[in-house]
Image (cartoon, rainbow, N blue to C red; front, side, top):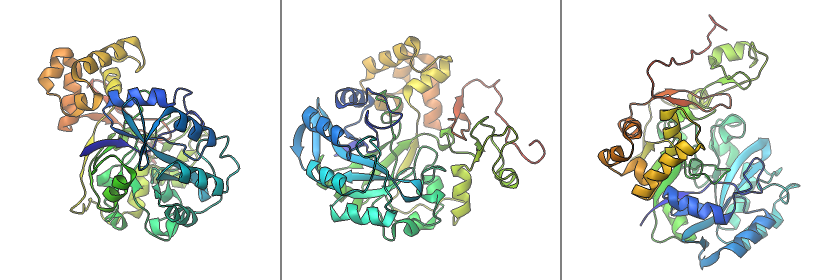
Length: 392
């Protein structure tokens, strides 16, 4: 069975997360999105585990269900060198046991615990308890594995179970790195709020025998991820090298010469695009035979917002979004499967925008320095220039 799954999210107990990130809100929003399986996030937090246990029915083999939405226990851990790791956990008992064993001073106060353990120690702990583990948003400049290491094996000493690409990278970028040719790639949302433009903004279509932890583990082993869906990578907020204060896009050579300090006084952050170029083995991607398509998309509400120049959460944008959902059931279906003629009958302008995604003809202002990129649907808007030695 083909299942749409988003394995990496956060609960209301994580810093900077919405208080609405609770099971009773996640479940209906995920169904409207078109997901069938959702990670719980924060599964080392004792109070969050209590809420999961109280709010859901346990279906067995690691799956917890609420209102027709299935959940698997997951967490993100910040380990040595501030590197983030995603862990998928077999059941509640193992989650509680691992939580008690993890050396961490903040695991009762923050859904994303911090630990002094390195990647190799964390992998060993996870594998000793039959968990799946891999780097979260592997290339991002603050907390990605590749910001500290040139090789994934330098971090883990062994082979982790997957690589999460993050919002600022895709398969074409990652497959320029030879050592990743045998890895399953995951595209997850890292959502901090239950809005459908956050939950499932990136997701995986995965072939499962049934919805169970055992099937998830087997699918990763046999590399049965059939498609990755996610943002055009230059929409990601760390795609390009840029200033974290004024968000100017800056040529990496200029950034280095100026010791990563912008002329405005801000700090320049190395972009995912440039970091991958530093460790790449080829200019063009070399895809292994099993590698599935990476399908670029953007949350429907953000497309509507870009088309009409109104905020994502405004009544106007949400009204159009709801009309499309009322007609076609789920957001993923609208973005991928529903015919453009049918969408056109509901909203002509939005149908053209979705067509641009499907045809790969969109125009993007790249993101960087912590600011997301955005789509240009109006030709008269000019793209910002990258700062070079001539104009720094």
